[in-house]
Length: 115
Image (cartoon, rainbow, N blue to C red; front, side, top):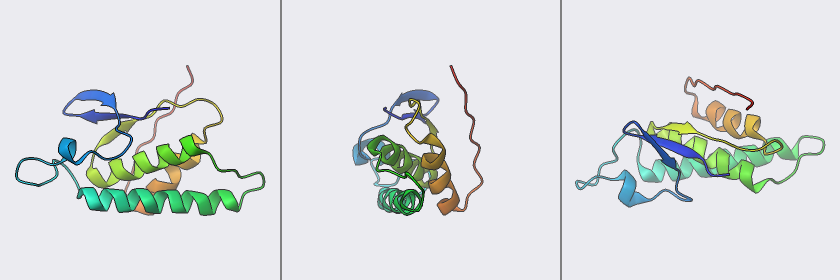
């Protein structure tokens, strides 16, 4: 699973980690939203929150792809970026976007579809 991000009207695979060269302009300012450090912190907080939720669930398990998606959602919320994620059945998409969205305190729009 590789999340997709929208940047200036085009979609591309999200980086495995935030790439400061892609997100920071020549003056050192982020192009949109919060700072790279804030995005990384939100990603960490999102994954921590996800771990707490799944630990309380009967049959809850560690899912690396779910954590990757959760981090991407949290970072996108801080950076003010759109995010498109395609992930297979069993990834845990619902919690991967709902936990960071709830932690952000922002209004979000989530659209899902089965293909």
